[in-house]
Image 1: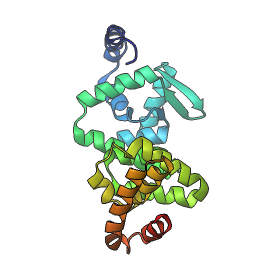
Image 2 (image 1 turned 45 degrees about the vertical axis):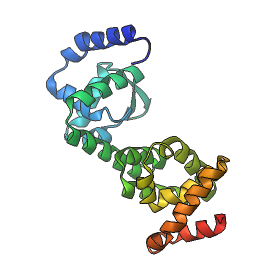
Image 3 (image 1 turned 135 degrees about the vertical axis):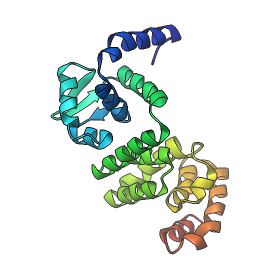
Image 4 (image 1 turned 120 degrees about the vertical axis):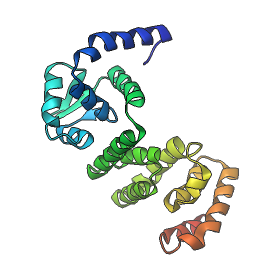
Length: 220
């Protein structure tokens, strides 16, 4: 939580004692499983919790004023501080398998909603190459002009320095974008290095991703 350590501790203690402890176990589990998303809908809650009455639980929490604000009909945004509180609890209380299942379900839901950049962030956190590729293909199909700038910004924020080089080199869609990102950022050394790596990988990616050869020829 934001602020000094003392304020953060006080807020956590307050939420523990006067908020969290007053909810029954089913409600607590509902909130922990939904903590992966900051904005909630009935359908998303049902996917994340696998509970058929998830929509009813969400509505009850809204009626109780449980740190949820309606941003549009049927969509509710969680207060930032409470969301961070839930994330901290979920990290300590949910097993890794459940946490990964939730995040993957959330990424798939975002993809189905055509929120490609949000889905891309989630798939990147999961190191899900297939999900990353699906998002990048969808973004490119949606708008070629918009995609170039947006994808480069994404690469700078979520890929460069955050994903391992081995992971990037094994993913043709990410690999193809790395020289572009360094080129647009004015990094000649990085551009040259990633161009060399891309050229080395072209034979193995040609059948799956033929455009990588076109990119190499254009930028070379």
